[in-house]
Length: 580
Image 1 (cartoon, rainbow, N blue to C red):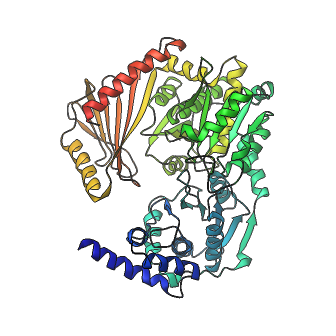
Image 2 (tube, helix red, strand yellow):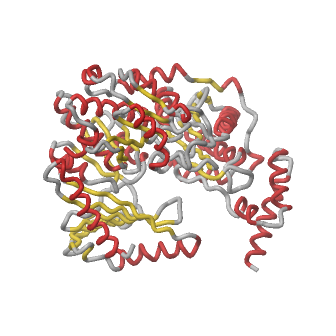
Image 3 (cartoon, rainbow, N blue to C red):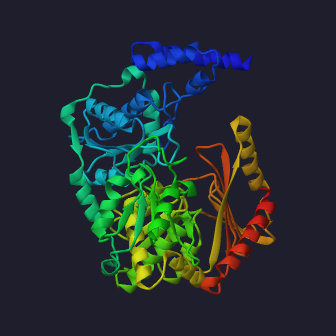
């Protein structure tokens, strides 16, 4: 009976898409779904509206209210336009940047968005072709815009697309604007969307912005002399069919690297991502073609950017000459270690410099910062929070780098989102610096472990689909709060951080307030043996995530295998005590 009621609701909703407000192609697609005896597709496409969340939109492409299409994108852009016209009503000319990646329909959605902005009296700087997400962030500040959007679904599978909204500081939208924009978007009906653009308000941009941006990226090089000595460093790079192809090889060349080998099959712009199962540089499979080329030419480093070129994955040779992946925590650690160590060595470090990491990222970064007397800040997951720290300290303190465990890093402050263009360039410099000393990137990582202690990070995703799953996840979090563990992996819990209550509680029950910008449904446990557990329900998927970090010691660079084996045992014990 419940299913019949749902079918009735989605049928009524779908029939409203058979009116002249929708184009013939959309109407035909909806009609096909309505006539199909199997109503599964119809239900999935219409059972809810694709939500404009705090980061924008993301969903599967197709007809329907729960899909990415010109009408859901149009409503988002119309709502954002309405909000901009309210917020900046005294401004003579409101302006925005519109960018897009390689995905199917990305260019189409970008052009339609540009038309809608312009129809609402807003000037648009529209990129002439696909560009990396960080360049869109840069361009917003470069042109003094009030907002901007990028059409991308980052590293999601090929059937997805998305819509990222930015504010005037080049960062993704934060409170109070995030919820206010959502309110405006939710008010929009299809008849409100102004699809007829004003071409006079649309300015095409491209190579001129590329040059300024790449010059700025080049300015963050710490040791240009080491690059001159190691200009033949053998680099293999792949954009995984995405936006990195436009700028990353050019950036490496501008930094002085002369031996850059791109994976030819993956330099082709293609939203179907034909050479990979998923265009995610976190996955070993996505780097397989690049590693095959690296083996063939005996390269020094492999790097891959995701479709919108904001995240970087990497691989290097270990002490046995085998290619191994460097995970997101290790990547962030290597970047910040190099920046701190070499800024100090070259006399570039200033007393007011600071770095940022997210609360679920490895605590080894704090050990590096503390030992070198550099301020380190913790923030929530997501680069909008790192951008917030930069904004709060603008003109007072200098941001010199920050990142998160999910393969995002930002080495500069003129961009306010993670940046694979600068990250790939800086990574090549780190490899050159290592090679100059007869070392590899792997050796650098071993040196860090020996000096600052060893840590192993593991993420466990517990998937709980559907409404019953959501209820289970809520019950799990409620239980952790009502019955906090006294011991994890046979080590006593010495500290609990509850970001929902914004309290930090020690083993004696003493509580102090946590200084964070807002609440978040995250719990953290710190044990006496240095283990850190972070528990966080996913905001976008039906799962609860456990971030586990265990500590160890490495007496020498060759002791990695034994330290890792001990850490694996600790992780097993932690999982057992948490029941995951």
